[in-house]
Length: 442
Image (cartoon, rainbow, N blue to C red; front, side, top):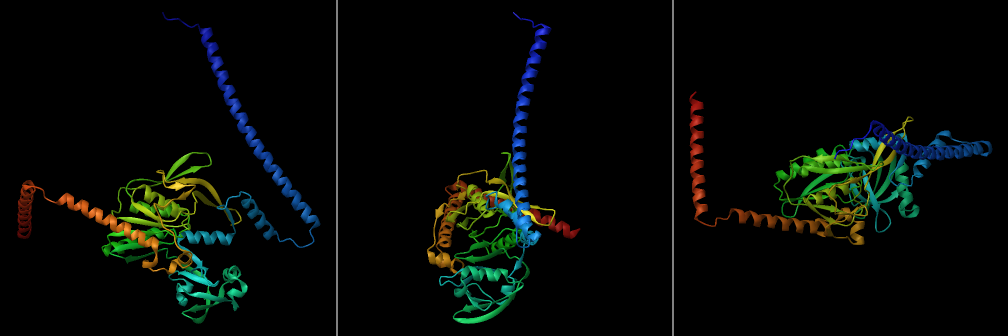
């Protein structure tokens, strides 16, 4: 039996529902307001304390105050207060340098160095086209003196600081094979060569990616094409000590290598995730390995994780740095900038990251000597590279066995099919010949 509700009751119910909705909305609004007011109050207190410090110092400080220096350090102090190692305040010069590096240009000498086993400065990498390269400096050279001061006398850290602060010229003395030579280097802008390639072992290509910048994808594609023209049968991608954070350019290379799918998602401060980069259907069908270590950072970590999760490559080496956050650069009105962490990245597939670090499928470490001289190791003395070669050879052998099983004839039916295919091909060739003849005749 249907019961009818009177108009008055219906109106009352509607009013109660409306009132309930208003209460919920009001309560939520109050919470948001209280939160914002609390934030505003905290900021007001911060500005108040800062104003008190400024007034006290200006009234009592004995020395002179450099307004520019003071503003720079206040800005740096604010960003340091975030307690985030990846957020940073950049001066106008540092901002421009960062922009140039992202575009694939560097201003400097063009050397990567490290402490040698005897305390001097070991040149690990010399970038092509850089001032160091043009001067004839080579990987493996030892810097024993900077600005006429012995490195051991002033100490390694001080010597590195002297090189970085000298502008625009710096004088060094290098030792090569026991022979010492003096150089005067001038800092200048040069295009970064972030990708190098070679063939090793039994037709296996190796691509070393030093960093990711705007020019890296084109350099990678060029390197890959050169290797494929040499008929490589496998590929090793070396991401050891790649510490750049240009995720876009890393994903552009992943797009070249991988089939269609998600590459990177980012979760922002609001807790919402969005897909940042994807790949198309074209991909490279080669056995691949990726080399990683504790210097593999940021975009290179994402790269190695995605390659593993797609099953396109295995990873070999040691755990990565553990930088799974995303930073964005914001320019300020005074020409300076702040780099701020804006989210956390995800490869969307999971399973290879622990505490933010990529865990290699084959953990292979280096001895202390090998670490100190990692850029000077030959292929034969690099255990991580040798493991990658062994894994690729195994994958190639497995593919070959699978292909042989697919094409091996098992009965007379296969023979008949071959004969039929041959007849069909002869017919097609004849038709093609006739078509060509008609074309010539016409």
